[in-house]
Image 1 (cartoon, rainbow, N blue to C red):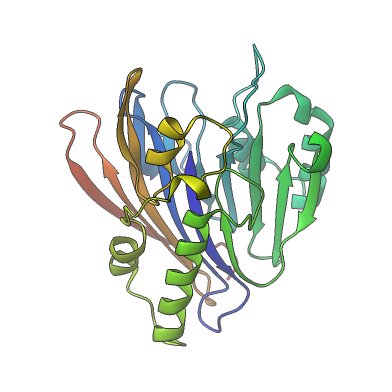
Image 2 (tube, rainbow, N blue to C red):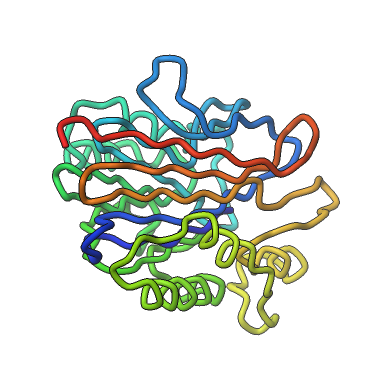
Length: 267
């Protein structure tokens, strides 16, 4: 389970600004933020299935995926984490790629996929759990959006808390530069949980309650689970990208951080 809030094409300095928490079992091996061996993709990586939850490229592409919370799952699905990689490696437009994914969407468990092409000012939302479980693709409008484990901008309380707090910071800093680390610390470490009556009710309350905060930390009977990384990705109008990640290291189980900056090609 993950959560993200982002600002798209609604700020003079930042055409795209994203904050993101990745929630996962502590036992799942993970590679932190880094350029991958071919030096084309920047992001963290799931070392178990090989996919990613958030990554970017030098040619101005960004991809983000979250699971869709549901009761039933496929017995032998494809890995959802491969979808962002396929987009980042593809030469197709975001729309062409999205249309292709719609044709095979039934091979994956529920997902929300965000495709961003900074240079072409395009952002798309792709899901295989739209109304009636029909796959769909839609263009994301300028402004603030929140993605949890339901549809884009679904009114889950944790998402609304994040949206409200994020908007307060946007209003506070206005057109000035944003302090990336401070934003992550202030917004993405929130541990407030929902009352039982406000939970989605997809799973039993004892499972959903500890997942109802923005920052998650819980010991389930089947394993320790929680927020493994908090990230911020800022794209400036001059094409400069700053990708920051605060992550829980696999080896010594300590929080560490890393920042990578680069210039989008051709800007």
